[in-house]
Length: 314
Image (cartoon, rainbow, N blue to C red; front, side, top):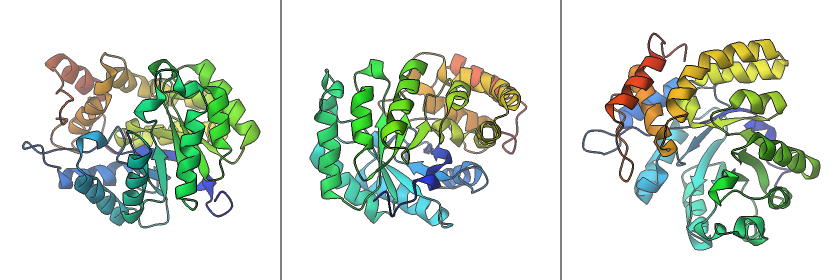
């Protein structure tokens, strides 16, 4: 598969799209299409990622996930890859979700770790076997690895991640290990054994440090709200211009702080929606249960961080 799928098409910004809802909690399709026009055009995004955490995939029905894929596929018609999240409890769900994603037009599937990986299994051979079974069932499907923070119990150890990267159909790693030490070790290990596998930096509150060390791109829900700034950071890193990178990172910092620093971090995508509300892209930031709406203090923090910024600048 690595010989037929050009993993370099993933280089750059992969936007993990948010999904807005109406007051009755049905999907706001008009708002979603405005979001795509804001963050998923070819000038800012190399790849579009749907049905992941940012898109609240676990709160969607199978029919809704299929519709998200359909609408996004109709928007991304210029040859850029469409990536879909697979968030399974185990192997049977993984296989059925991959099949559905392919029917919806996905080019790449990003495999989230199943529940059984926690409790110490993330450092055993279990994750490798899991990916090998997926590759056996879908030998022509490009796979991306969703690397969780190591501290969560779902993050793969460096050795395990390197072993997964050597599976023929694995083309990328969404690298979100949570520490710069783990990030560096993982990048070095994966690139040593599988240099064509793309490292998509995904540690959301230190983009600058990841790109300064090295990455093949950024994969983030933050790109839903600040696609131009993240793309500017990426372009500066491609130029090797640390001064320009620092300048862009300084502009991003108030927004990164408002979205990612407060607890609970699980509210980050709702805060991203609130940023889109402030920019005039969508009408409301309400998430689906079990996520909770933002309190007044958090709304004020996000709005202050985005105040005075236009959608074209973000």
